[in-house]
Image: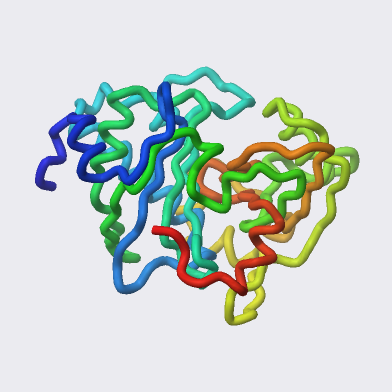
Length: 277
């Protein structure tokens, strides 16, 4: 890919970044997808996994295979329940049922080499499912991203189903696992957890939890075994005070499963025009 080996933050900022809001190391990068046919919302896990593999490959070509920033790859990082390395969160910004952006966040922050790599990446390619041009359109503080996923809000609702990371059993229900994960992330305990129907696309077609997890078969298990899709569910979480996003928890959360959005944003999807670019 032309220019793929040029680590130049100034060029990336000038050519690819619409706005920079972070004073220190950015914690968020946003890509926009271009193509005649983009992946459906139910392909969230597939696209998040593809974005991570593409980001690792691009960083390896720019910096060397042994110098891929751990914040991107997640390799060589001590297991941290706060999940400080990168999340690759596909987003349907305009609510039309197809994915048009990827919000990449890491609470550890992206250093210069990681920014250079993420801001200059230009393509997502999968031999079986398609190819999409991507452009970095924003970088800054993740909680200030120009995305409905950023919050803040006291009420959050599932965009993609939460898949329990542990086997569901007596004393460790879906709700128990959500509370445990939130506690490990340093977030307040929710005042209320409600299981809810999935979000509706603009054509009012229902989105089911099982549409997300098994869609890509064996590929899903590359990141560990998912529990049966019947344990996946959509939720509404109400906290005692507003919290900042993005918020993704559960199995596959680094690739967009268990993703939540402020409920007010979900309620207005049907009335929105084309989303931000």
